[in-house]
Length: 258
Image (tube, rainbow, N blue to C red; front, top):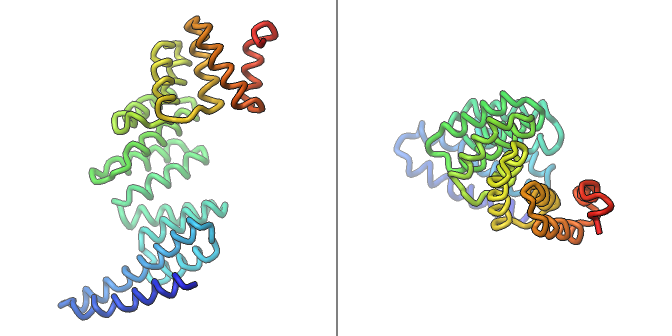
């Protein structure tokens, strides 16, 4: 409550200064709602980060009452409604956020992720591509990654690979892109490139059950028994109760699993 009051005290002090300094009173009046909506939206985002969702919703409702076409407020409300499981409202606000500000690439990225989770792959890719078309957008690596993941999860590995390669061009140490590239190469039967990608993955990220199992499979196909055994041992010892450890036991069989 103290932080909320303090923020609005600052806003109350700043607003008259803006009005007094502006030579065009019409412009000042136009800026004022935007500024107030900005403050409400930032407060809401802070509350969402602390998982105080009801207060966040109240702030966003007030921001949108001030400025219904505020792109950031619509974006934040979409994210909030998504967290609350209100798909229709989430999509309504995502659509509004990108419609009123065609340069809000982060909203397009999040909208694409939202659509992909609902198996609306073509629509998701369209949103990702719109985000990537903005030359000022700074988070291209993550958008390339999300587009690739969306396609890979729907078995379109050929197109997914193109996005993962672009993600790695933007950020060569992006762990998820390295893992997916290793998996795609493995499924294609290109085991040496798969090894290269999984080794790069381990140099940038912590071991997971999925990555250790994939590494085991790759090394087994390359007839590197000792290396495969090492990955198997790490998987069993670090993640004994995982589904991947169970799959490993089936792959190795009773003779190998000693």
